[in-house]
Amino acid sequence: MKKVRKAIIPAAGLGTRFLPVTKSMPKEMLPIVDKPTIQYIVEEAIASGIEDILIVTGKGKRAIEDHFDFAPELEQNLREKGKLELLDKVQYSTNLADIHYIRQKEPKGLGYAVWCARNFIGDEPFAVLLGDDIVQSDTPCLRQLMNIYEETHSSVIGVQTVPDNETHRYGIVEPSVQEGRRYQVDNFVEKPAPGTAPSNLAIMGRYILTPEIFTILDKQQTGAGGEIQLTDAIQKLNQIQRVFAYDFEGKRYDVGEKIGFVKTTIDFALQNPELRSELLTYLDEVMDELKVK
Ligand code: G1P
Image 1 (cartoon, helix red, strand yellow):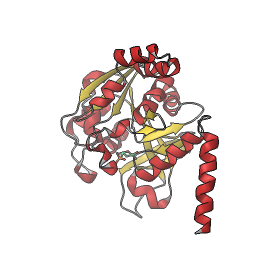
Image 2 (image 1 turned 90 degrees about the vertical axis):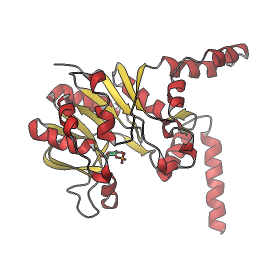
Image 3 (image 1 turned 135 degrees about the vertical axis):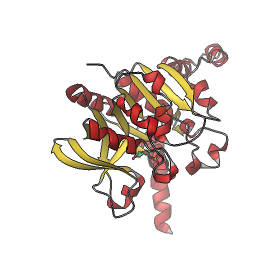
Image 4 (image 1 turned 180 degrees about the horizontal axis):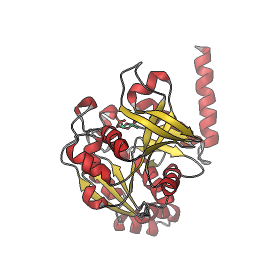
């Protein structure tokens, strides 16, 4: 059996939900406390056992490459000032992983971004991690999916349950047989119209796929939103080989939209021992002020 060694992180999106900040800054570089969101994703991939990462970038994304690059002048400056803890943090992001980059020329959808990575992946199973979803869990989310791949040798898609009023924002699976947290799937539907979703199990930005997906993406037509949809290609893959859904364990944070981003920032700050007590005091004050009004 071929191992899952490589991962794709699509990062070519325009980040329109965060305009104007994303006018000149990649949304993947927005910080949760002091780390850009994309670093959390790279860390999950590495913690799961991924060896090589390809980030699919586009125009205006240079800051991502700089972030994971060697920064000799900055390092020198921190060393001279004795700021060794910060130096560690800077070096950590440089040494984290072997990261490769490819530029997607047009923003034509997630399916297209994955297709751009076909030569990097070749003929082996691989992972896709989307930057809008950060997952905190005991076993890294991607590792959970890799375990299922090692058991079944099949593609597997990470899902979690969402409320009825949110199904239209996601790829949704129509499950057939449930085996613990794992599901066999009849259909994968990208962003079903409100009230038409076949279940509440939503695709959450973590995938293990077999390379046959590329043959399908070669011919994939545009779908929802006029984009080439990965979910549509997965639906076709599921007709020629099994694709499982896996209800992974862990708390998923949606950093792809404003309210999710703010909640994530608060939660992560509360987990940070340097910030926790001051933030709690501040939140109490805010709540008290609101009650007075
Ligand atoms: C993408 C996928 C969708 C998935 C979602 C998870 O949509 O197309 O199937 O449920 O990510 O975050 P996007 O949010 O990029 O529109």
